[in-house]
Image 1 (tube, one colour):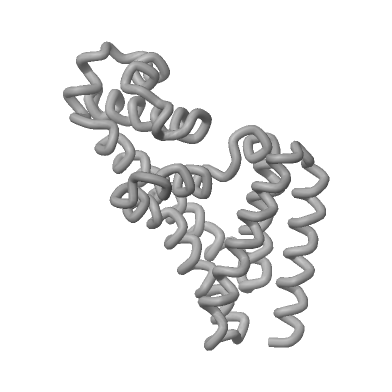
Image 2 (cartoon, rainbow, N blue to C red):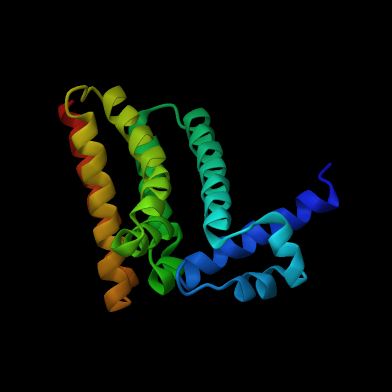
Length: 192
């Protein structure tokens, strides 16, 4: 059972996670986090000395959640095509949030890449965990030499779909795009 201190820290991290996604890292202040987490202002400084420290805690939380999700997919789906299609379904399942705020990983990395390269490097781990998992799926499909390239293509196609759907506020575009990606995956599986 978590202590009161651990629960408070977790509440701060969860609040910051949501704010960084909705508003962006640079537009989120300590005051925003305090208000969202519903903790006294002094409490936040007990747990985190800077917003960068909060970001690192958010990244760790996201990585932990993602690792658990990917492990569950590995257990639940017996073949790589089903696992890859489950990955693609995230976009379709998350359509309202993606149209409102973009991709949680992509938008954060794009923001940090502009003038905070040290933080961007740390946050890149959010892409890396998916890229490495996707690479493994393509290897299992039989694309040993091409697995890295295919994993990056899938990430790029997904990010592109999300950006265009968000710009035009077009959920149909996102739906059609995810179907097209699934056709691509099935075609790769046929020719493996």
